[in-house]
Image (cartoon, rainbow, N blue to C red):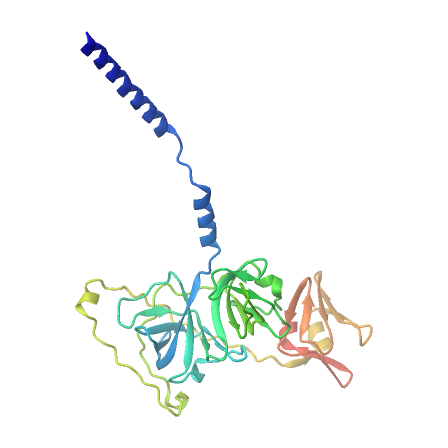
Length: 339
């Protein structure tokens, strides 16, 4: 009799456990608050990083350049399109590939999750470069306080009047500190405070929003740099090396990019404002020397001030390559303003 009672109690216990387990399975899977915060933090990190070293060789290919760089690690071979930016670390001015020479210090701006070949040294695409070591360079996502948690070191920007701010699209807009907030940026900077975060007045800031970079490395070079463009110290051109057996086991498909057609742009020149504007259908109004000149057409108003390259088009502030000036009782402006 006792055995029957014990068996019944055991069966009831097992069935009760199964029911409880079934109820637990029906409950929805919840994501913890810490996990959600972690995902938000990842979204606020820069999508870019830097790799630095010294130029060992420069090779010009059909679709761009390959720059071999040596450093304390295994080195790297950067591939870059001809339109890639090159910034001088000293003053934030732009350079060209023709100005690069062997043994120059260079920092490549690359995607954190960008493709990289299995070769030695590895090959990866670079969106742009900073040349020199006069100042530091970093990438980071900067919040409303212009502070980046992922920059190395943690950095807070104090934008000064001398700070040059541009975007990766080459826009003519005059950027301010507000444009840098909540943006992924590349920053060239000098001295910093010893606080946390370190504070600095940057030399150069590039907003990387919308920056595009090739998903595959550019093809191997097919032509050398012309003799007249080489520096006095010849640049070493490396012959392609054979792939090792380990590399051949996992071939990397390289997609050929369409050959870029050079764009011919007219140089910006000073042109007489009234004649040029009226030919384009604008109405020109100028009441006094200390007042801006107004160009009006189809509901759009352009305001031009003498002695300034900045001009206002609607609510947007743009910048011409030439400052407006007065010659022989005529106002001249950059041709890019009228276009």
